[in-house]
Length: 161
Ligand code: FES
Ligand code: FES
Image (cartoon, rainbow, N blue to C red; front, side, top):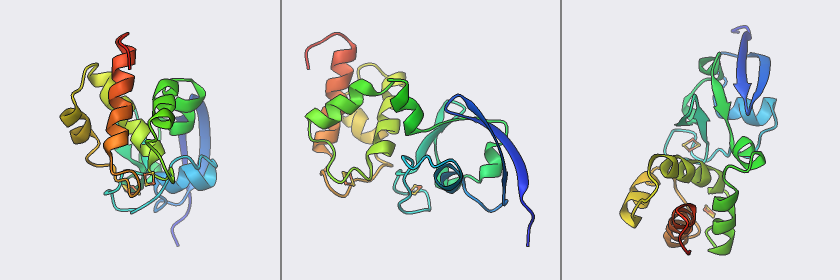
């Protein structure tokens, strides 16, 4: 049996030191070791986007990374973005536009949407769809999600929703 390895990383602005098995993926580490259960696990092979987190500022699939690969990195989860208020307007728009039903995809959707809006202040609906094409939702049919992101983009530019 392979022995646990020490890792140190920054998670949502706090230093974390842990001993993990080399085979443990980052999503399971966040959920099971740190109780950050906002990072969801769906397909576990990089398709659904439910496990999306930020690693050193870039969104990644936490199910495709090993926890040991995050050693020395800065990780932000939906809890971090939510607690800081960074995505408060997106969360409000998702609620107002009925862009979530079961909510399973929502943390990953918010992470991806915020990533898009940081890169592009004025995305059109096609660009929103393209950026979210790696995030699956089984409930909403996507229209309401695109509406919520479009609304947030408009409001961030000081326009009416
Ligand atoms: S659980 Fe990671 S992409 Fe689906
Ligand atoms: S709201 Fe249920 S999967 Fe998206």
